[in-house]
Image (cartoon, rainbow over all chains, first blue to last red; front, side, top):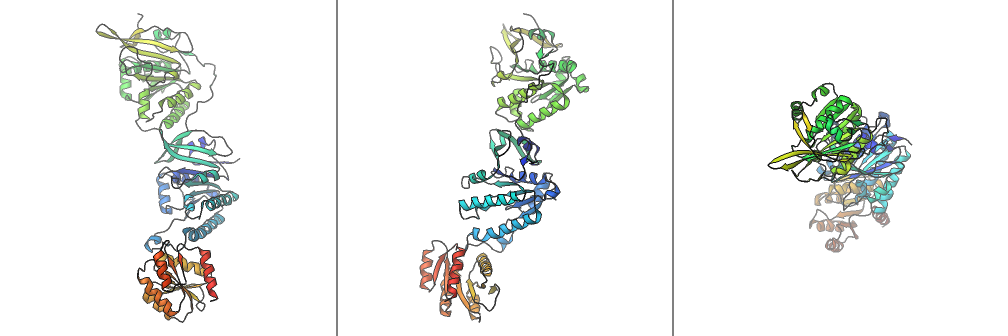
Length: 459
Length: 127
């Protein structure tokens, strides 16, 4: 079964290798969703001897070529068959009502298409959109028959067809969905713009909706991360020291590699400092550590670590630590996940720090933080990368919940930092609240953030 | 007044139609069926068409765009002995009644089915 690239790497991944040759695919969605752009990507991905053909009923060739160039696609190898009315229709008042449009337009339209197909023998065809044909056929039955016959005609000539539809309440496209071998819906949900594969005959595919962007680089699709199969390597679950001897004792030896640890506590208590210590130590003895900052600036994160004697600068110089600011609204959640996964594979990272989960949600504009973090953190943990989630709680004192976002179930280990009132003073205390893989000290311990970073005392 | 279609010596169908789009699609339709079309867009061009020696089989009069002037045109056709069919907008009941009163052979609502129109034209061939 031959696969053809859609020209969009993320979409090819979703379709497990691209569309199937000599099949017909429907791309549906409202205005501005990226249907035409997706079609341009598909044709662009064809080789010159594929004789890619764009059959358009709406935009002029010039406009389409201009739009393609604007997203960096050279479409010089694509033939545009423009079936939209030219300016004379308006200027010379060529509108008519003596015959139905279907009686007048359909025959010359079919002739133009047949002529182009016979002449070019295209391997890739994009039709934008088949909804236009609906207005040129007398009834629903004939429309369905017409479309079916049209698609069969193209497929019989070894063409792979992508066609768009503009569905609305007034013009539903259910019939086209039945006729197509695959259906891609470009729509919007609580995650923003998404691409969903509703149907894909003859192949498996990545289910669910995937975030997408229709922007300066054209259509980009970011497959929803699926945690890979767990890697059972020799050093799986090896205890890695945190860089704070006392904490290692409380943890029963350290934090096991490939586990997810949540550092939770109120603002300003020292979560990021503790994360810096662990990142520095991991970089020193284990391998690369990467810190993604969603709120704090890189400069202040480094400055504080430096002031507290936490060595991040040495490992940074040796490229054993990377600290990266994640700019607000730069990434979609799935896009960010792909980026992290790519970074980790490239740098052979051993520890990833997300500081913080609240920033993750705000920066990536994602309401569904639980499922996103779950998929990303699990994906990393399964390839034996440790994950630190820095989580801020709102309550300053008392018994705060471990996570107000309800993500504590994600963590294999939870280190809770909190304040306790002692007379007129607030005392910082650290408690190992959860540890899946070993016994641990469950008692709260006072700690101090000072010139020697984090110092834990025995109460 | 303009002319479309192949043979100058064969009977023509006179299109008394204001809309350029309608004249164009009807002219093309007639040509596809081997019929010659003559066009008239107002009283003057109709007078010119009727003054030609060319035999006119039938006139198709589209009421759209002529307003009350339609009936003057119909009167001219009737006086000249040219059979004519009136094309009226759908639900143009009043126009239909008037057209028949002015001597139209028939009134057909737009859009017209091509098959029905060609059938009608062929039938009138032998009149």
